[in-house]
Amino acid sequence: MLKLLTNPYPVTRGWKKELFWSLLTIAVASILLFLFRPFGLANIPTVTADQFLYTLIMLLMIYAIAIQVILAEFISTKLEPMWTTGKEIIFTTFYLMGVAFLIYGTALSFSLTRLTVFDALVFMLMTLGISIMPVSLTVLLKQNWLLKKTLTSIEQLPAVTADHNSVSGIILHGSSNESLSLNLTQLLVIKGQQNYSEVIYLSQQEIKRKLLRITLAALQEQLSSTSVIRCHRSYLVNLQNVDSINGNAQGYQLMLHQDLLTAPVSRSYIPAFNAAWKSFCENTTALNNQDES
Image (cartoon, rainbow, N blue to C red; front, top):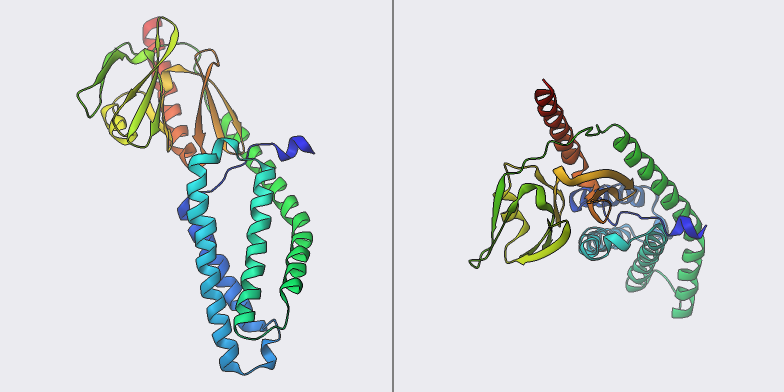
């Protein structure tokens, strides 16, 4: 069980998808609230009940966007490599407890409940106890589904059977008159760090690192005609040096330089990576066939 809870899990599906699903969930919940009038709303004046529902829906929308979109997007940049199914279960459970607290607070402000603070705490603990099992089951099933989807996608990728790497020279220019000259075959990974980029490359078969004052997007433009592609919001990878591809629920893990270095391919970048990898493999195979003939 402990192993299941420590499996990697994606923090977010991307802010656009999270925003869409948050708004869709709120829309469905709004329809159900107005149709069924829970919390004894059918027994109070319609105007008061409608005001309560409008207020609650607005607060739930703000809360969902703040937690599921903004906070999830922020922590994904910091905690994605360390995020697990266990952390996702805790995060989702406390999110639902927040929803329960929001409902209680709104009902209290409209004088629709006589629950004391102690009663509210008991209510929150009951919410925790009731939600922990279905949340755990849902997260574990989704983790298993995401893992299978990733592994199936990897199985469909072609493998390069022989090397035909470009040895062309490249010069990476920073924004403060600094640069790095190397052969394309030496370049492994470039990792973005806000306005800086850490270039990881080989020099005499040793892994070296150099920090350039330039954004990852700007470096991507400099390398647009090469085998270097974007695979993650914070990573560029040189396809020439990918030795193997593994995967988990978060996406792919690219193994480079005898598995001493890894680069992630986040789920949102998988379709673009698949297309780039297939094209790269086809070009490599064609060049190898030309050499043999």
